[in-house]
Image (cartoon, rainbow, N blue to C red; front, side):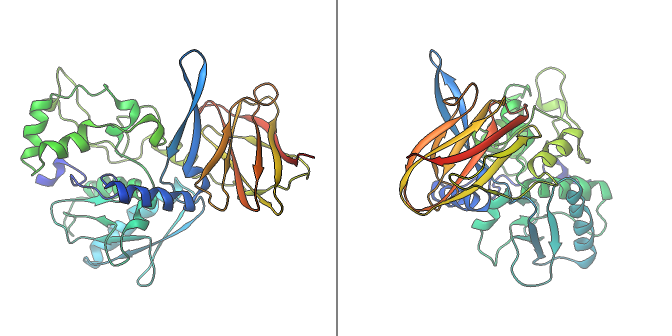
Length: 363
């Protein structure tokens, strides 16, 4: 497959390597795109005390139409990329709509030779509208189908919010890298030690991304040759979606899910459930007059309740783990006029369960 098969993405990948100010802007855009891109997870510290970790995700709004436009490239190459990219629609509740003109969230170029890369999820919104958010540096009309599948499936995984599998928090310590050999190997591709550290050895923090158990079969996993590891350990080229890829992305973009539900202070409680592992339910309500509001969950499910706002879906105003009855959550807060959102998740990412949610105004 040529000399480019040694890697999938360039050492600098938009959306994975950003300056602080760009990261701040990216977080703001992500939180406006989808309220559960900002989540609170209770963590135990010390002698039973609880603190919160805020997760910053890059997922698109579930059910969204993503407009995709080619900036350049040969028609036959564009056609193969389009066909393979559309496979993601079977995994994620998104429509990938290729357009010839007008506004587009994802813009594809072939101009930067030797490297392929993509922004990660909503980080595409940080890129000027005239510039590419994705690049394929070595795809040609004669490139083998398996190479198209490997690279296009991988880069569109980034575009929908996935990270490199070897940088999954659960991958820490799982690959026995021979570091001197890795540095020497990637130096032949023009990577310096900082590039290798950032793109190969570093893993994401637990509280910065959705992730599954480490999956060496993931389409997002680089090949790991035995020559770059200590002992006998290797991962081959992955060209198909693994079962974990499929389950994971279906959970991030589930089908047949109701949009953000409306709640009313003093209105009836809403009976609902967390039907799938990792699900986050979102609710919207408005405050017309200042007052103290009591927000609660009820039922057998161990819930975490987060209050967002005012008028900013990405701002975490308050959260609670178990101040309600049993394992339920309860937030009491004085609120001023504006729009607010509540999100509910199970305390254990792998668990599900029924609950009800309601809001009342303290007399």
